[in-house]
Image (cartoon, rainbow, N blue to C red; front, side, top):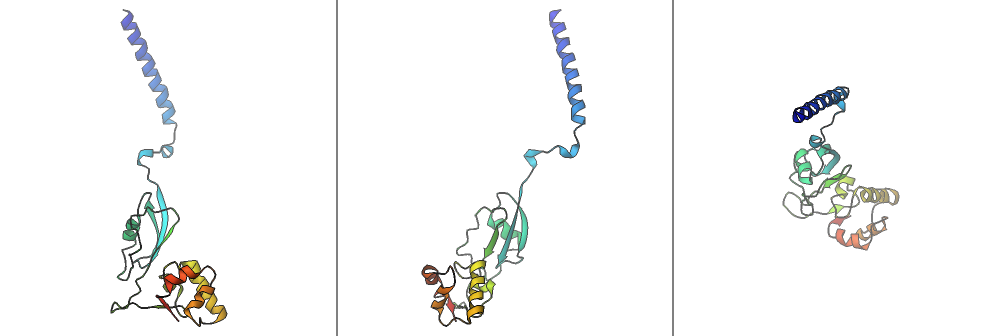
Length: 172
């Protein structure tokens, strides 16, 4: 008899408890319930340079550069991937640049003219990003054409070490 009473009490508590719980759950707006397990975080990144469709993209967190390249339509035929690690994990807000190969159609190395190159072409050079490309252009606009390739060392931030990497790739 005691067992039947105890089972009956647990059953009543269980049913009443479920009723109270359902009452509170039904008051929660359905759009505020988040399935954390299936929620995916996205990153906003951009890619430019030797890429088919440069621009900004939304990617899942933990995506790598190879995923971004695929989203951007792949590489152009003159992309220089020799120094690019495509397995690098993307970071939110980052801008990724794929450099161009400095070769002409005969696969002969050509040099970038520091007196006439656009900012984008200057950025194909090692250690020259958007900021340094802008500084090179400002330097030549303010002072006239470079007289020697060594003069590029007068551009703020470009020193001997950078010049050593550039000297065989640039011309006047």
